[in-house]
Length: 106
Image (cartoon, rainbow, N blue to C red; front, side):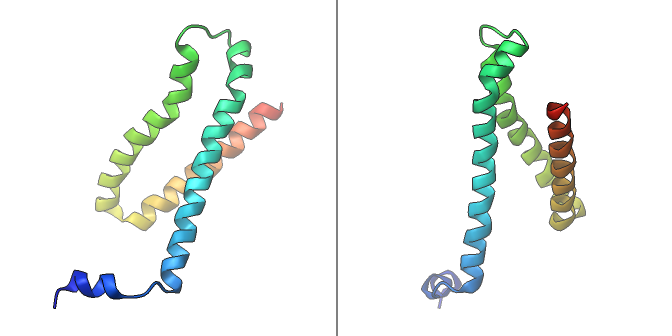
């Protein structure tokens, strides 16, 4: 019997639904990040006097950052562990999210 065929026949259970929920929340927050960037782009364009292709470059820089950092953290996770990399990434996200909010509210 093939192991993959056995796994395919198993019914969905609680851990599967939990993984679906966690993955869905990840996509939700990623989508919210993109929505915030697109919502604030007209104000940023006016405030920073951006013209031409610069607003598009600024908006797409987060996607390029995701691509670059995903490659680097994959290699780092193989060396020091995925859980440790995830905790460092979460700490950086929390720190910089709070810093941005404080800077914008001033």
